[in-house]
Length: 111
Length: 114
Image 1: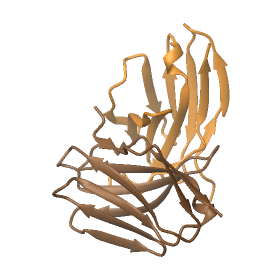
Image 2: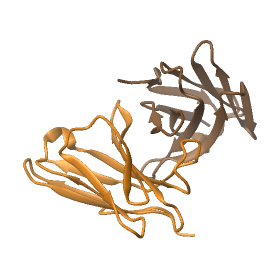
Image 3: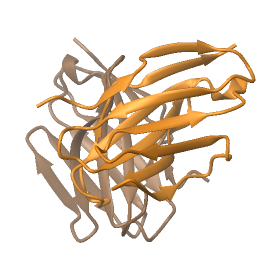
Image 4: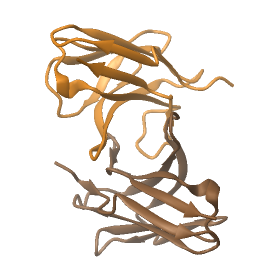
């Protein structure tokens, strides 16, 4: 039961342009959403999060948007840099339950 | 501050064998979660431990089990290994048992079942 879905397995963008990674979820109980970044041979690292009471959270070049009615969130990276090339996981949770992750999107930023 | 440490990093087993993976959380973290990562499936939640008690469990067969010790270190065990158990097993710790808390992941233990 894949409650968190990342339908794009890969994304390629040019350096300096915007990267938009998308995530959909099916469980309306989710009230907290996170993005993690994973480099090869390393564990995922926390990137940015958003509570369901907000529709936008910004941290430097990274902005997460939440559309609760559409059960959709997105991560915007502006401007994209080659060092952003990694696999990005979307995650969601509610109350005291486990955190559910998507399948990940591999972002490649070309110089 | 040391990060989450997982051992072993790599291991190869054959079908039918059993395996034990170890995870040492960040000092002071009392919650430890385990995830299985396979290509195309993302991170599948296995279980979470807090203060030596299993708090949540994912949809995995009983062959997958775990425990947590008084020092918060955790182990997971997989018995009667199957080819499909080949995956990267990730351990994550957090300061408190809250799903709004950031998870800190280890580098993982890559298991290959032949």
